[in-house]
Image 1: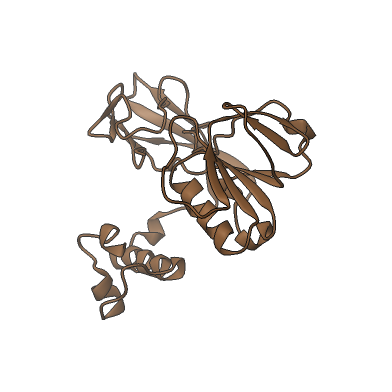
Image 2 (image 1 turned 90 degrees about the vertical axis):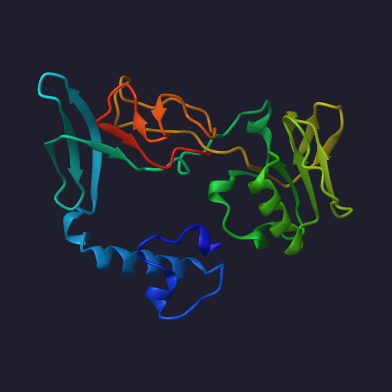
Length: 243
């Protein structure tokens, strides 16, 4: 709900001039965030269409050298900074496991990151790998829009809800042969599509090893004081790394 996303110094009511529903669509949230940026007057301090390629720490100067590519000018340049904040998030690089026989599968294999329209899977049997929120959400959408059946393959434990008759939970996928999938309990299912609901990887290709956060998707990543400050170099900050 929007109540969990509201800025402490800039309420939704201040921006829109009235109360709004708790679950606004994406366009409404974008307009609200844009309003907060405009109120603070920071837009002019931001360089858009610039990609950070490399960050290096100079211990003698106690500064970072940041190398950037300007996409509009197609040029590279470097600048020095006293502090660096990594705020690139961790929901853009999918974690995609591989199972034996994927090369022979005739249908579509995708990650939840690339899921766009449940109608694509109307009248199809789908397999979801993973048993967390994405599997629940995508499975429910596909079921609502007319998929033939939903099979959810879990690694640790099933979600355990009371599902419709054409929805079942099975142990982890072991192998694929054509359209037939075999699971850890020996059961099988023929499916038309496989959707990975298997989370994301922390991915920082612009950081060297001594500055790079290495962590699975957990609530308290290691080496971050208060979940933000990089303990090995307190001039480096990570935002939004918690799962």
